[in-house]
Length: 122
Image (cartoon, rainbow, N blue to C red; front, side, top):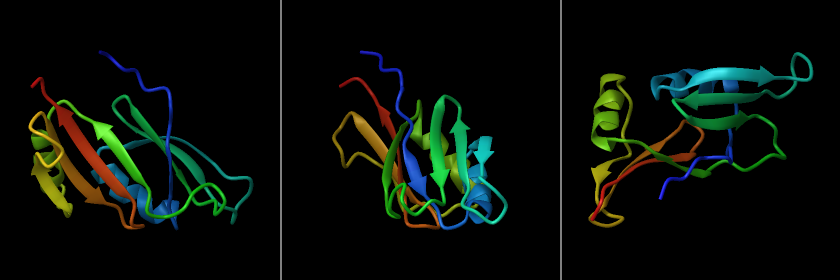
């Protein structure tokens, strides 16, 4: 079964300016930002390949401590990439979700959990 993502999750950040470099190290690039006027909260779209998320400073959008899952072709290669970037890996790749699911957990500076997953045929 092939699933095409058509939902974009939002993650709450305290400061987009401080969060952006962290997400750039994760391989995300900024697509666009919106701010009603200077000094007001930022709402931004970022993407890594075909995976897109929103980062929001708006207090009413969502709470800190969210969880987002990202499906990647090879979580072990992503793990190595993140190590090369000097990032802290909260939980290195493992199979705690089952023998055909390999996953790795990262936690961003605002306490949001980012789980990178590779699913292989059983």
